[in-house]
Length: 265
Ligand SMILES: C[S@@+](CC[C@H](N)C(=O)[O-])C[C@H]1O[C@@H](n2cnc3c(N)ncnc32)[C@H](O)[C@@H]1O
Picture 1 (cartoon, rainbow, N blue to C red):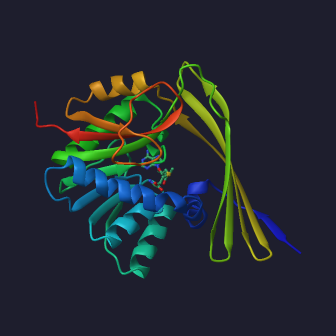
Picture 2: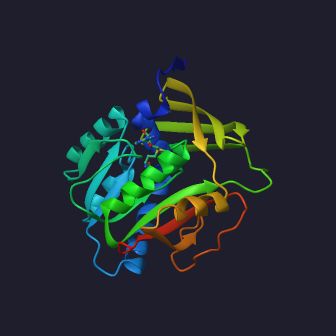
């Protein structure tokens, strides 16, 4: 007989399941970050920064490839999970609690990255602008920021649900994400998430809801223009093919921006 139980809190309070749900992205993203550093930085990249690093799936993967990593998040459960994992894998990384729109790091990074729509958790233009300014201040001149987010289509015909399953050892995690409402004027999407984790005869369920800021390509461009210390090098799509930059357009698509820290004007 299967025993079912509802989990409390947000899905970021349960990093052990969140981490499984997103594991398939880790290798292609880590490969792309390395390839982008090779292509766009005129120096050997050693120090990497991940704002809102969550469970640190990418921090762990990149630390294992020999980089020096710093990462921060507002979620204490995610940071605890990451620190335990680093200790278990005998890897080092600097981890701390901080807010994405207002942070500071002591030693400049050669490159930074932030993927899977994390940036869209910043719900106002002021917070998004603050984030890009902080990233620019945290990068050495010539360093890059790899930023991945879904852009909204002009017409608004966006697919409104997604469901996938991932497994690790005996645990199977299924996530259903549903876009329930878009407030076009405020540029806010309401998203519902249902996470189900199964292990042997145990089943855990979690329902959560969160908001994301929307961006058309023009809105993202305008935001970027307000941060002169960052310039756009290229954009890529979900295929993460470093040989094939794509063009910015108004279709609903996951877009990976490669931004570069300019010389102070
Ligand atoms: C979609 S998860 C991505 C985690 C990680 N970057 C990854 O790629 O797996 C979003 C993360 O952003 C964090 N977060 C949300 N708002 C934040 C903020 N304002 N400042 C810092 N972290 C934030 C959450 O706690 C969560 O860990």
